Structure formats: C-alpha cells, structure tokens
Image (cartoon, rainbow, N blue to C red; front, side):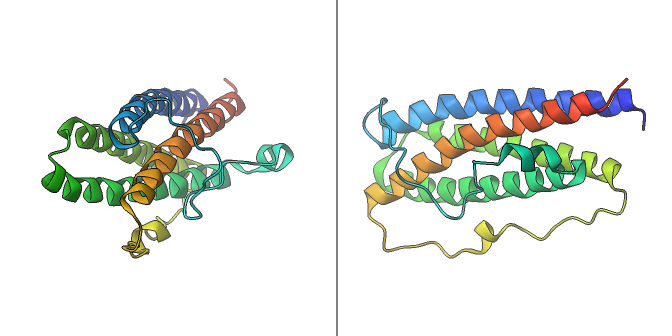
Length: 186
C-alpha cells in the first residue's frame, strides 16, 4: 500500500475521531442535564478503574511503534464501546420505568456506531502495519459483571465518568492519528 493511501487512512481516522468527540461532547451536556440534573455538573475526582489510562509519559508515547499505538487504540476503543453498551442497556431498563427521553439512548447508539467504525479503521491500519496481526479477544469490560449494589446516583455518575473520559480519550486518539499521518512521508 502506498504511503499516500496510508496517510489518507490516518487522516480519515483523525476526522472520524474529531466528529465522534464532537458527538460525545454534545451527549455529555445532555447527559449532565438529564441524568445529573445540572448541565454544569463537574467531578474530576472520580475515576473508573476499568477505563483506559488517559495520562501518558511523552517520551514513552513518542517511542511507541506504529503497531503498538494502533493496538492500544483498538483495545481502548473496544473498552469504551463495551462500557457504553452496558450503560445504554442500563438506561434502557430505567427508561421503561421512568419514561426517559429516547434521544439520549439514540445518541449513545450513534457514538457506539462511530466507535465501531473507528475500530474497523484501526483494525485495517494494523493489518497494513503488521500483516500477521490477529484480532484480540473482547475487552475485559465486557466480561465484568454489573455491580448491582450501586445507588441510582452512583450509576449516573458512572455514566458521566465514561462520557467525560471518552471525550478526553478521543483528544488523545486524534493526536495519535496526527502523529501516524506525519510519519508517512510522501
């Protein structure tokens, strides 16, 4: 595959990442308003251990091979997709009880479709970088049992954290695609 084609693929992934991030920011506002009761709700002190790390040492980041960078992106996107799937199903159950607006659920589905498209693009890019790549097993987030002892508020905060961290993660992912595109000299 020519370097020009590969660079275009990275640029396409960059564009999809940016548009997905824009959707995530929009749904995060809607989620904060509908689920948290305050569009200005912020809580940076809480984290979920099942989500990918957002902080990266700059030198380590620069030293990553293209394949390692893409593999990490694939598994991280898969984790976010799985967490959103679990949260979406939970919201569907609540919707039946509380008559919640379906637009929130539809927005989550749209983000999941974008993430699925990103996974597909990253997968194809990985195959180019290393032709012997084998698809990894599903992310651990899919296999984690749902914790049922949480309060409604804790569950809502969890949804907020997933969307908040996904927004930050997509910024990081966009940088990865820019770096990968810049490494493919014409």
